[in-house]
Amino acid sequence: MCNKTYMSEKNLKSHQLHHTKEFTVTCSMCEKGFYRKCDLKKHILSEHEQLYLNAQMETHDSNNSKIKKFRCTFCDRGFRGIQALHRHLQTHTEEKFMCHICGKSLTTKSNFRRHILLHTEVKPHKCQFCKKSFTVLRYLQIHLRTHSGVKPHCCEVCKKSFTQRSNFVIHMRRHTGEKPYKCDLCHGDFVSKTSLNLHKKNKHFIIL
Image (cartoon, helix red, strand yellow):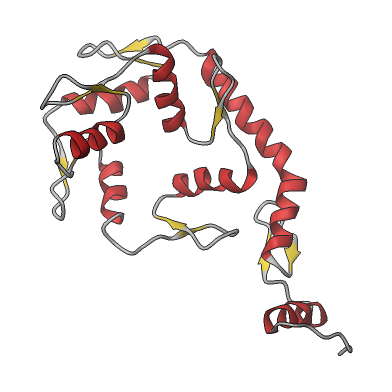
């Protein structure tokens, strides 16, 4: 084909693809083909990243502009939409979906189905940049932010940004002083369940 030489077999095979013109990966946004995953990653970050970032920021600004006018009659927690309130109300009812493997109770059938996948090896949603795979598409979408650098959740107090909403919520509690997780063995209060479990492990020698 040509007289080029390479130090490794991997680089040689990558080069040979240019002669066969067989693309190994394709962009899911515009269907453009590439020989290498690294080229696909560069393409997405240069051609589609700004569109993705704009969409994320519009969603973030839209969510922040809405008033939580739907309130739970049990705990007074506020929600922006009636559907979110209905999902939350299920946490106060007796109906639960019990996992037959670990005994965990889930409040909705969709959460129950996602939970069951955690006990299996089935992870259909694969990252095109690395070897990680996920049981739920939403988890993959959040993971992709680690490759793109997108951090849609921004703290208005200190301007620190986060890729995941859960980390953002925990961060905000450090500003507000809210500590909703309480230790049932002492008077300790914590900003997250992870911090509570770590406390129980180190202070009370309980491993959960």
